[in-house]
Length: 86
Image 1 (tube, rainbow, N blue to C red):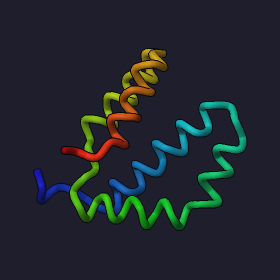
Image 2: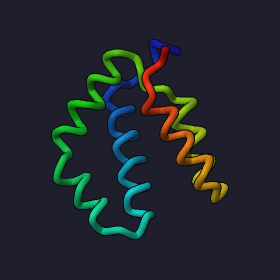
Image 3: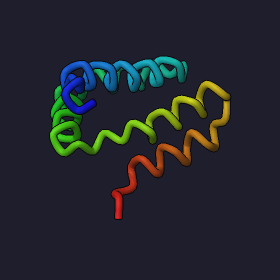
Image 4: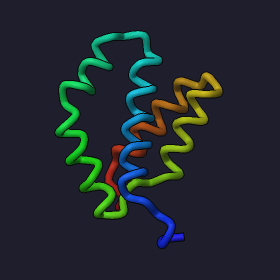
């Protein structure tokens, strides 16, 4: 599995996921915000990938919560994702 991992594709997919979520919120500021800070996001995503800290299961749980319309579960998933592992 590790041999099949494509770092650039993961970064691209992760950025697209975040952008899609921002656009879906209906708040044009969020999309503009992502575009404005794209270079910072790019560096951040590259650091996460280098550290192998991309936490695919956590991202999937958030996406599933959004798809199911469960905003509380999505919020809690985001909070867990942003909390450093102990």
